[in-house]
Each structure stands twice: as C-alpha cells, then as structure tokens.
Image (cartoon, rainbow, N blue to C red; front, side, top):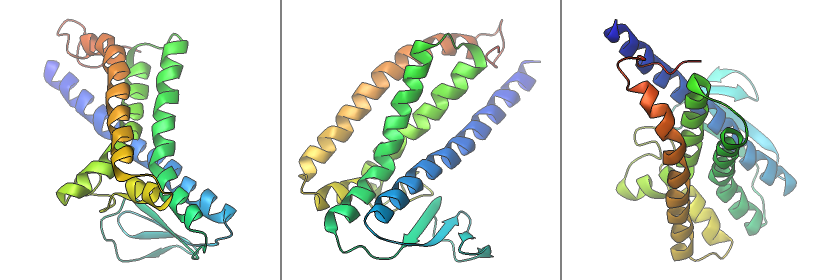
Length: 202
C-alpha cells in the first residue's frame, strides 16, 4: 500500500516539475520576446527541447541542451538587450512570490497547496540557477537549460555592478526560502505521514 503511495508521490513530483518547467519557460521566453519587441525587434524563431521548432514553422532542429529558446532580430539599444536578458528569470521570480501570496491569502490546503508550492519553487529557482550553476560549468537546471549567467549579464549591460546583482540573488534566495519553508512545513506533515499516506489529501 505504502509502495503504491510512494510511486504516486514520485509521479506527482515529476509531472508538476515538468509542467512547472513549461510554465516557467513560457514566462521566461515571453519576457524576452515582449521586451525585445518593444525595442523594435522581430521574432525569428521559437524552439523547445529536444530541438522542436515551433515558429516560424514546425520542424526538428539541432538541440544544444536548452529548455526553450527564442531568436529575434538584433536590437541596437543596449538597455533593451540588457533588460530582456534580465527580465526572463526576474519575471519568474516575481511569479513565484505571487503564488506564495495566493496560498497566504486564500484557504488552499492539501494537494493543491503542494502543487502550487512546488510550482512556485521551480519558478523561484530559475533566477537562482541561472545566476549560479553556469559558474560551475553546469546548465541552469544542472543538466538542461542555459549555460551562462543570463540575468547577471543583462544586469551588467544596464550598468548594475556584478556584486550588487549577486547580492540581490542571495537576498531572493534567503527571503523566498524563509516563506517557502514556513508554508511547506504543514504540507510536509501530510506527505511523510504513514497514517495519512504519501499523497497530500485534496
């Protein structure tokens, strides 16, 4: 019985993780597109893993490890390019706090709370992973994703010192996880309770 519950819990983790990656990629790449198009760029290509081109036409292309990516015509304004690079992960970070606010404001419990918290966690780590893991020669999701510190590079193009960018990322890490742990503690009691099973109730 418990073995089946563990399998269900693992499947839930995997499904929510990948759906969160998709949602996060839409937000991330959408931010790039909107900022660049405001600056006058035009969308040339949209691709997702594992090498599927969605725009301008459906096709199979070379996959270099990204989750999703967009290509636009070059913008001559450096601040637009910098803001575009910075806003991808930053918008996901903002979305992660909005999800925590929803949980705090509304009476959401059980499995729904767990799913929203996990989604929020994935979105929050987009900024953290993109800023840290490439320094260790890893992708921003360790094995997949971008391979350079995109938000830090974007902030530098806007004149923000690197030390300040990493201080903001560190503050985000501490601040986010302080609230995440507090909210997750009640869900964890249900997840790891033998009496209640491994799947949080609805």
